[in-house]
Length: 376
Image 1 (cartoon, rainbow, N blue to C red):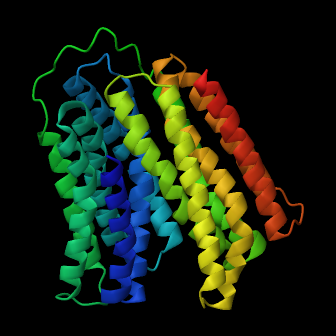
Image 2 (cartoon, rainbow, N blue to C red):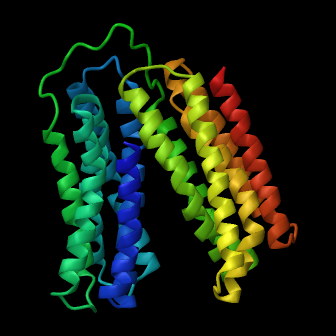
């Protein structure tokens, strides 16, 4: 699962290279807008349903899948007017019908893929579950390169079709796995007892914190400083994502508790984050990159501390669902996001490096405190 997650992230990174190679900036920009609208739409519509599907080991898989699909589709439909209004407000000169139609299609197909991954983890073989995660981004990358050589570079249709094709393949994994509901293990005590409103609030808070991070940094410190933050978030942020996908989600799918091994996995990933940071600093100092990119150096150490602690948090994130603490987990995590936003937005006139040390220090302390609570 770690290899599959890494392959999926690599394919998504290479998708950006394909956009630069085969499509014009206007086409790539149009695709980025539609894809971002679809992503936030499906994120809010799902409201952490894949995580709930994995955590509710006491429910038969097919019953849990039906419940997740029904609730997610209902939220997708209820969000339609809000999304349409946001699209019209952000770009009234664009064709609203076209943007909304593609965003709706991509959101629905993403929903299928995002639910197919936990379904495969619970019902299919390990190899099938790994392919369910890696194959769709790889297919989308291949389709983007192929369509880019045959369709107009000025049109985003090739990119949109490539993304849709990848999501279709991912959604097909809903047809794989066991077709019958096996009785759950009597030892599986884990569950996600959070209300739909709490899961939605948790999702919204995560989305707001993620979007505000780069936007607020650009507003306070300029585009160059925002680019440093965004690049390092992408570079170091993939490790917590892999730990969560390849460790915490798998333990939830197997209803298998783990504390000591989870701490070991988190610490190993944190150490790897430090090694990547050290290598990145060496590369910046030893290679003739553009002088402007040398501004990354002061960002590396605080980002390593921040994302290293995020690895430990990700490795232990299954435990609240196995200890009957899912509701408290959401409340504490939302509180952490609120503190992060406060430090991010406080108008104290800090220099970028000082501001980053405050932000990274608060986030590191908060994530380690949450990790200590989850490890109990």
